[in-house]
Image (tube, rainbow, N blue to C red):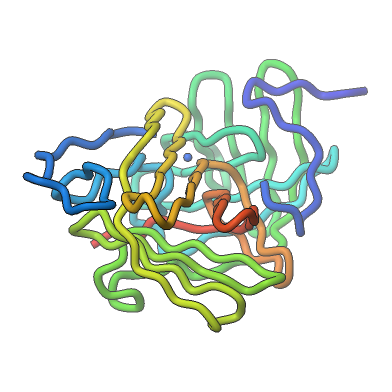
Length: 242
């Protein structure tokens, strides 16, 4: 029997790539330089579910029917990511184990087993892998880190200015570029950034969705899509809190 849950799960492989709050506001830079699109003077505030919310690690879960989830257990909430959404659940009373709930969506776990239930069905899950959350100490000055494979690349968004650094082609090429926010959907946890330079266009999309590194299988709370120089690169990432 096909289970339909309110958070629109669909089957995904653990190795396949697959968050909701604040927007951005800043004063424009006076007199943009030639070749530079008008950008804000400060970095935007990214949706909160791109971040671990104080949790020390992310956990991957394999569920039946075959669906893959990512969780981050904080002191006062559980953050849950699926292939199609992200959710914040609060603690609920339970006789044993730990239970979290948002409306009719609940997550109960004890040890390495978990049950996810809603008004439309149930998932039986097992813990698969955990990864420590990236910290500002590990990535000084970075508020979001994304990375992908084949070819290896990564991107870092500065925490104070609308600027990002790109390392492409297994480290053979490095760029530091200004960006502007072209779309921000806080409810869906989606952000789209575009280049602030007319002679070096790119687009970077961040989405609050369960994502798994396609080489290591490590869990992340965001899908990252980078389009640059005619290439579309896909990977995973996470926001890094101060």
